[in-house]
Amino acid sequence: MKKKVILILPKTGVDPDRPHAPHTIMALAGSLLDAGYQPVLIDSRITPNYRDIIKDNIDDTLCVGITAMTGYQIKHGLEEAKYVRSLNPNVHIIWGGVHPSSMPEQTAKNRYVDIVVKGEGEAILPRICQHLEKGESLKDVPSITYKTKEGIKSNPGTAFMDLNKIKREPWHLIDVKKYMRKELGVDKVLTLVTSKGCPGRCTFCYNYQFNKSQWRGKKAEYVVDEIEYLTKEYGAKGIYFIEDNFFADKERVREICETIIKKGINISMGASCRVDTMSRYEDEFMAMLKKAGFKFILCGVESGSQKILNSIKKGITIEQILITTKKLRDYNITTVFTFMSGFPNETKEDLYMTMDLIDKIREINPKANISGIFPYTVYPGAEMYNIALQYGFEEPKKLEDWGSHTFFTSSEKLGWLSKKQRHSLQYLSFIARFAFYQEAVERSFENPLIRMAYRIMRRFALFRWKHRFFRFQVEWWLVYKTFRWMAG
Ligand code: B12
Ligand code: SF4
Image 1 (cartoon, rainbow, N blue to C red):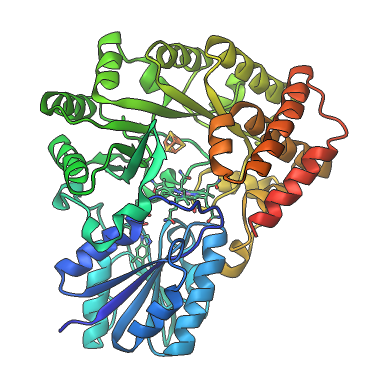
Image 2: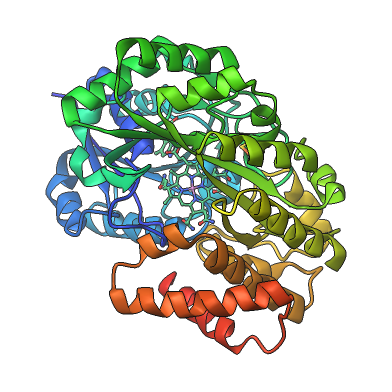
């Protein structure tokens, strides 16, 4: 019998009780199963006794795979890698995901990393396993960086996989009901990934390097088949597409929606969309989205200053943002707009333009949600990373240092902002979120006392926002410290 491969999805520091399905390790597990290996999935976000599972399986394990985004997931992933090593010093530890792919050499230098897989792992991981099993060199395995006796070596990448080779994710490997969330106005909402990448070129986004700004999607018929499967097999009532750009191919979206309508599948749906895409949709197309079940759309708007939008290569206009706001209001689709601040060339006037745009959006649609104005967080793999370095961003030098690189600490390293400016931006992000994202913020607090505290703070936020009065922010200093403490 082929050996086991333990796949760990570490805690992220922002995990709700019911997180998104662990698509990363599900995808890897599917391809390991096809190759005859036995994947052992560990989602440490929802598995209190996961260390026991590692311990029980380690003896006949060929290798351990760990996924990581930049930030807390690295810290937690390293703790688990250390634990694995303490149980079995010979087991190979393989890292993958957005962070290791963006910084492969630096990641591979860590003592708890043997191999880094750059980019998609479905085809590569089984190949690594075959080589490890036979004790062969990894020199022919593409897209990896790995330790050898002579030092760290890197093999060149390979083409993107054909998403249509995998028609359905291996849902049977996870306890699906633990991932069913209440949102989109229904309960039992699951997540799906039906495409990868995005044609956008936003300079702060990982897509530029990780997906080479290329979008690829599963055929509409497979997408609908998977939705139907989740409704029949698990009673799903809603699907949230967590991919970067569900709407990149209009004809695919049309086919998906028309098939859902034709088959009479009763499903609520939500996804992210670029505002340039949505602003171009005709009434007939919007009506079809609504009829098929779209209840929620999230749009990354980032700034109210056209100068900033152009400099971050967002590829959208203020006019398109306003057209999209009206469209989503007219079709009564719940909307969330996300914003950022603190870019190297952003002035106070640009920031005030963002606040004015938020007011305009709320005037057009008082129900539009603003998820906050988040301080720009520098991530490796983004085009802006090098610009940030030039402007004085203090780059973490080791994998473990990236483990504490979060939304909170990143802005402290933005050399172009004074301490006062950094604090103002951090507080402003809370003010905007507390003021204009009521439903989601309340949903995340189950304790009625905390909800009450939130409602009081919301009044402060609305007052400050209305009067643009941002001095003496003692209350937001407290909120900031509390959240920072909670995020570890
Ligand atoms: C779902 C999701 C989450 C989930 C958790 C996901 C997880 N894996 O743990 C939640 C909601 C908790 C989350 C939180 C955050 N997220 Co997030 N998230 C995503 C999202 C939308 C989908 C991830 C996913 O499931 N993809 C589908 C799977 C199949 O793809 P994949 O994860 O890339 O895995 C493939 C390869 O990377 C590779 N691979 C991955 N791991 C491994 C491991 C091994 C061993 C191997 C061999 C291969 C391999 O093979 C896989 C199959 O092809 C991505 C965007 C995206 N489209 O990927 C952002 C994304 C990963 N998140 C991002 C960010 C910034 C965050 C937050 C910081 C946001 C915030 N402001 O709070 C927090 C992180 C908190 C923290 N510090 O850790 C960034 C990551 C940037 C970076 N440099 O790391 C992304 C890319 C979004 C973006 N556009 O910028 N996130
Ligand atoms: S539109 Fe979104 S996913 Fe696409 S490149 Fe820009 S930020 Fe990234």
